[in-house]
Structures are given as C-alpha cells and as structure tokens.
Length: 147
Image (tube, rainbow, N blue to C red; front, side, top):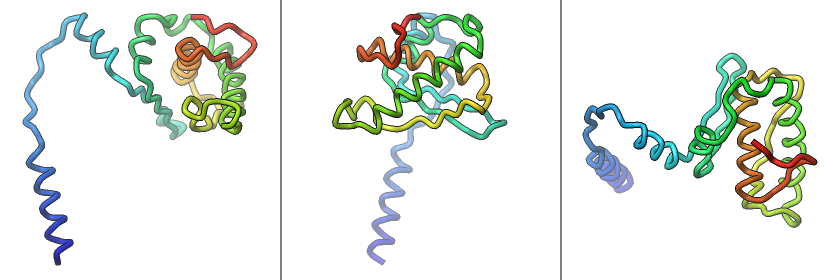
C-alpha cells in the first residue's frame, strides 16, 4: 500500500510539472538556424522496411543544413558504396575498445549491402560519417573526409 501511494504521488508530481502549450509564431531564418544548431537528434526512418536510425550528435543537424552537399548531389550507388566501407571500419573499431576510443565507437551499425535503404537514409548516414570524421579527426577509410 505504501508503494502504491508513493507511485501515486510521483505520478501526481509529474503531471503537475507539465506546462501549458501555446501557439508559437513563425520563426525568422536566424532563429531556425539557431534551433537547428541546438538540436541533437536526427531520426532517419523508412516505414516500408521498418527500420530506424537515430543519430544523437550535438551540431550534426546544423552541419547537415549548412555545410553538407544538397540531396541529389551524390548518386545513391556512390553513397551506398561509401557507407558500406565506413560501416565495416566503424564496426571493427567498436569491436576493439582497447585500441579505439569506446566513447566514440559505442554501438555497431547493422548496414547490409543487399538491402535498399533508399536515398535519404544513405545520404544522411554518409554525411554523418563525414561529420564524425571531420569533427573528431578520425579517418574511417582510405579517403579524406570531404564535403
């Protein structure tokens, strides 16, 4: 019974902390850029294949919007080839935490070459690899990470 009352109090506290939502007017271009810089999470999903990639990286959204090549610049085949090479190297580094910084390489990426993930996923994954290499001064392949 004590646990039930405690749980009820916690739920009441959480409910009372909820703030009222109000309509937000349209933001200026500078405010939008500032918000993109602060946003840390990028979610890439494809409902047809039922998968999702979540990138939690400070500054990636801003970098993607401001410095990356626009969508359509690279062909999907180019992006798939580079992503596959980067994923192989990434996963090898995840499996060697004594050799590579385990804070940078935390989780493996399940990227399979025979699955068509679509252009958007390949585009954002490729750009994340470029962003990661340039930001943390890493090199995931024989190519210099260029935009």
